[in-house]
Length: 120
Image (cartoon, rainbow, N blue to C red; front, side, top):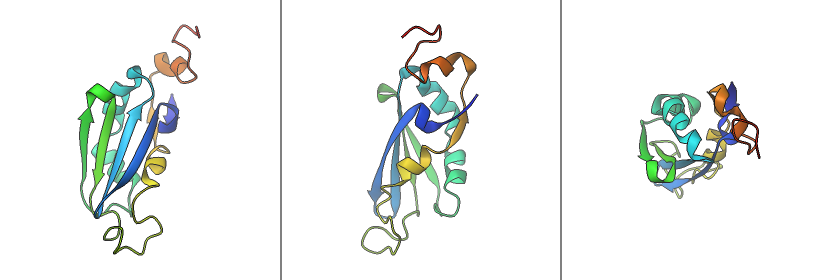
């Protein structure tokens, strides 16, 4: 089934100069392997097409069930130089959570807090 990332993860974003930093954290450990498979540098770059002018890097934080993406050349020069509305990339996390991915049917029951057998 197709879901938006906001159904299985939360995110936080900010800036380091002209590079946006987006952390994507699985809401449950069972969702982390799906993030690894579905949320690639290439897909993130495509999702931010027109915004991210440079490469996208990804760092795996398995102990946190999280991924950290660096979107280079995506802030119009950075906080004090940029004329963009969001010069610090604070909305990039919310924007990434709009990405749609494939979620295996057996994990669908975990989205609303139930286990796969439907138990609370």
